[in-house]
Every structure is written in structure tokens, then in C-alpha cells.
Length: 406
Image (cartoon, rainbow, N blue to C red; front, side, top):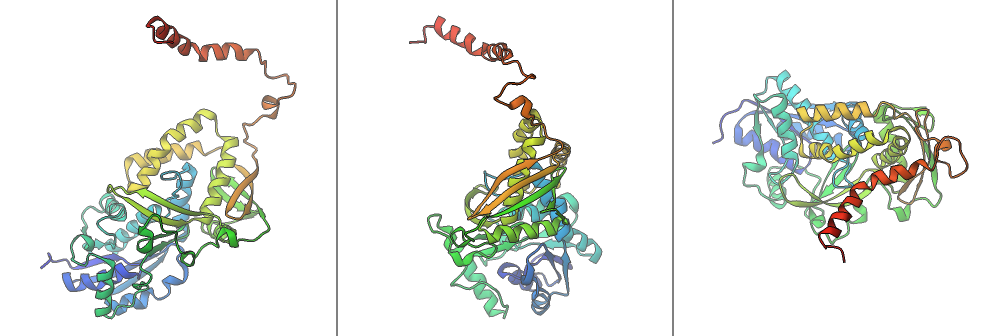
């Protein structure tokens, strides 16, 4: 018999895992379970949540609209920094988990709960992201991670458990891959995707058409930024969530933002994930274009040296950590001059930058021109190059003295 707890707040999605977990917590811990679902832009999949949770035994159901907070306080800060994990993952799931866990903690305190629970497996990254947030914000709460306790050790067993307990779930044996959606992306894993040679089935994708099926006519858009955040689309100011939603529609229409990645999980194994991030892909391309005009070379170089660490902190679950606070402060200060516009063409899976402009631009045509100018003495480059090559000449002399040159 498990140690007694009185009330648990469960991060609940209504999918296979958390539907089973809700019933399992009640049976195994003989406790009250509060189901919490975060609206991060999943759309219609939230509609049956309340009824399903109550039918499965939840005493209270929270469905909180966190869309604006998600984009404003998590997505935009990460994109200001240029965060990307292992060259192409834009961290859609990684950014959502600390917000969900933070709200779980708030509900637990409001409801007098003594425990929190999540549906992350013992093999994945999400267990770390949830639990590091719990520990950072409310270390007094007990953490229940069913995947590390029970003997329901596969999707097949979970489906059988759900069937036995009359729990409707959207996963079948014929289509067993799982998905996770929010305003930034939708991810897919498991099932056929566990074979890295197998192509993802086209009917799996929900946010984007295939590039082959995208319109034959390109579409041009303009994205305006203030201090690193996108604020205007084609001259219209939009809130953070509305901006990402609009960019998702545009990108999805043109097949932009599909990624098929074998990534390194924090726990030490590789996994294959497929992602749709149409709006984020456009946003990143436009941001880099404006940034290229406005950021000093050495600021950009320093930012890029920190970027891998920053992105890993997000992926590993350290959003609420002192090192993350320090890095975010640096990233935000660096982005202060990044204000301007980028013009992009969307076509057949591509978001191509065709123009950028900014009142804060450090680009000077009168300096960079190949034509005659009055601001740059090309003869000055001789001394610059000789000083830059001094260490190379010294090394050559050493190798020659040691007889190492043929």
C-alpha cells in the first residue's frame, strides 16, 4: 500500500497516460484527485476534458487559458535568445512544461493539496522538467510519478487498462504514436516513429500541409519586431498569442516548419521525434534577419557562445534556476536594439528572407560598398592582416626550426 496522501493535483491532458493515471491515483492512493489542464492552444481537444476527467473520478477540474502567458513569458524570451536544441528543435514541449508545473503548484496551494503528479514516463525528458519546477517553486509538495511506480509498462498495457476501466482514450492499437500540441508546435513520437528509417505517415500531420501540396504561388509577409519580439504582422499589431496563431496558419498553409529529428534526451538515450512548428520557424527566420542588422558583432558572438548552454537549460528543465535567470537577463539586454522589419516569402516548405530594415541598423552601405568611398582606407588592412597573422608566422618559424616542415 502506498503512503497516504490526501489530495493530488494531476497535470491532465485527457490522453491515454493521464486518463489512466487519474483512475490509478484514486485506486492506489485512495485520495482526492484534482485534474488540471492547461490551455496552451490545443483547440478542440480541450472540449471533452472536463466531462472525461469527472467521469474518470476527478473531484475538481481546472482548465486554465494560459496561451498569452505561454507565448509572452516563455516562447518570446526563448526566441529573443535564439534558442534551438541540436540545430533544429525549437523547444515547443520544453517551454510548455515549466508553465504547466508552475500553475500546478499554484492550484495545489489554493486547494490545500499535499501532492502533485504528472504523466511523464521514466525514460523521458518531461519528468525532469516537471519535477525540477516543482522543486524550485514548492519543494514541500510530494511528487507522484506513476510511470516510475506502477507495472503498467507499455502503451499496449495502458490501452487494456483503459478498456477494462471504461476510460475512452484517443489512442488505438492501429495508431499508437502519441502527440503533444500547443501554440508553438505539435510533437509526435512512438509507434512507427520509433523506427528512424520509417517516414512519418502524411495523415499524421495536423498543422501543416506537405510542401508538395502547398500553394503554387508564393506569399510575401512582413514581420515587425520591437526589442527582439514580433509585434506586427503585415502592419497589424497583434498580441503574442494572436501573433503565433496567425503565423501558424500562414506557415501551415505553405508547408513550413516540419522537422524530423533524432535527439539526445537528458536521461541519456536517443529518441526520434517529429515536429510541426510553422509559426515558430517563420518567427525565427525573421528575427535572425532583423538581428543581423542591429546586433554588434561581438555581442552576437558572445550570445552565440552562450546559446548552446541556454538551449540545453530549457531542454533539460532548468527554466526556474539561477543560471537561467542570469542568462535570460543577458539575452534580453542584448536584444534591446533589435527593432525593425523583415520581409519573407513563404513557398513550398520554405520561409525565405528577402529584405530587412531597421532604424537601429549597424549596416552602412557607405562602409561596405565595393565602389569608391571616403570612409575606409583599404591600405589600413595591411597592418591589420599582418598583426592577425603574427601568431601564424611565429608558429611557422618554430616548426621550421624543429625541422617539422618538409
